[in-house]
Amino acid sequence: MSKPDPNRIAEAYLARKGRAKTAGEVIFKKDMSNDANAWAFGNTGPSERKILQDFNYSPRNMKPLAKVLRSTLAGLGHVLSAYQTFAKIKSARVSPDGNLGGKGYIQKIQDMRKQYMNVVEALSALSDTLYDETNAPHWAAISRQEDAEDRAEVADLIQDAEQIRDDPQEWAEEQMEEEFDEEASKQKKTASQVAHRWMRRHS
Image (tube, rainbow, N blue to C red; front, side, top):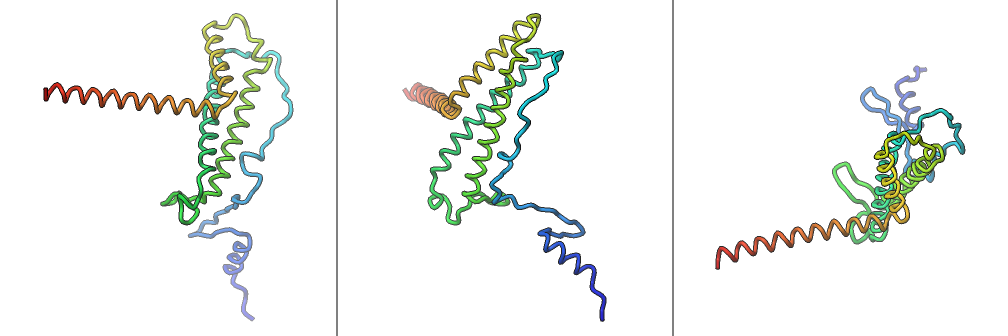
């Protein structure tokens, strides 16, 4: 009776475990495509914190947090706008096979909708955490000896973030409209200047 080949046994074991084997390297892959608990939804933190009373909550250190909060809310608004538009697109009108992309960047349209929701959920959770932090009592009790300019800049950033937070999608769409209007105005002005120069040359 011949002895079993250890290489075949190893290959059969790896195949049962769903691992791909390539040129001396074992690659572990986990298929997350059908996981309802996708990366944006599954990580919940603790319900409370133990705050050190003598920690220096300076407005100078809060400024970058306020900037991140504003940028995160702005990103959330643009992603919400993109998702709403993308969700309304009928797959059959833009793709013959239900996919988009090419050359290594191919995704199913159905999966892309889920990924947009992932991004929305992730940005929403991040902005909620940052908002709670920047509005927490430990930042409100800042020293009066801090620079007034720093306090004013932080207050402006927080106020701007508050306005975006009221309706991030509407804010993003208004921003895009303003950019398009500004670009159209520049193009119109440029075209008018070109026409004016042409008329002067040929008059």
